[in-house]
Image (cartoon, rainbow, N blue to C red; front, top):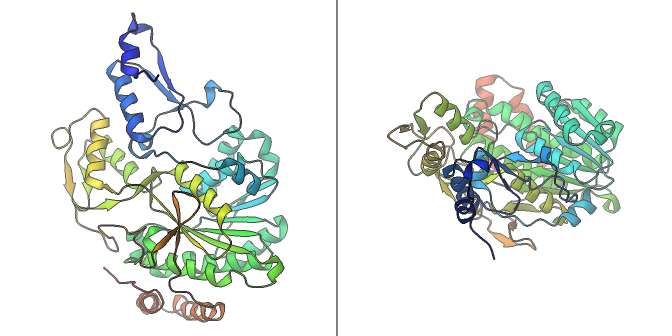
Length: 432
């Protein structure tokens, strides 16, 4: 019979002897986790640790150094996600895996989880040398035995020659393409750069993957590609078109399987709302929310990445998978919750201000209500987008030529032309 922590703590004669609470139930969702956390805090327990959910899943022995502090993200967004580790293990084990954008929020977590499945080699590809340096430290800490089989490559996905060199040297069998420009307002002011990275970067990488007979190419997409109102969302939708057009091309016996995986916002990623709120809290507030009705789907980074890996094993090629991110959350409620977790009172100790919707933003991000609809898969949190607009490889190559003319042209005319071209080829794209 399960006994509540509160009852256990109350029955301890000398509470001062309780130095730590260790939560060893990795499947807890954020509501149950928060209840336990609140009880421990109320009983003045100084140290609260949790067993990691993802890494070392196949090594049941518990090491104290592997315990983690409970993060804000865990308390606000952790969900119960069932993962078939055996299938993912069979998919990754003894394979050479390349991850682009390997120093980013999603890319770095992909690296860490993939390393747990004993790959033959892992290639981390990123344009940011500082991020790559950070990843050398992380990999060396968690997987020192893999350091001689891990390559840290500085490069730009737009640089065709550099990408080709990497593929020819390492011959990856699986590619996870996480490199992208993702910040919605910033891309509204830099549409040509969004096209260069999100569209041409994907096209260059995918074409070379096809030529080099990569087994499986997984492109990380976004819910913002659904009925996009932003440059970022529209360029990621075109990236999906590219992957669908290239799927099955070339030698049929050795054809690369191209898969896209869409998901919503992850808690704790760089530039996302939780780090921003925490920074504002440090300054004494106020916390800034764009609109009182602003709603987003949220999941923690480890959960989202584990579902990406699960979806990657399921695809037959050409699919756009959609992750179920749980129930939508009001951003203002997230702000209130974060203030409360810090032991403060919303609107009294810390105020919340509404600043207005930014360029390209929606109040509600569509994901499972995609315009093409979705169908269930064999995993309860992974769906498949129904066939919407698709372009042939020949048509995609024509589209790329049109974009190429624009991005290489004069800045101002090129930027207007980019928006017009996106409207022409991305159904439902509409500027806000």
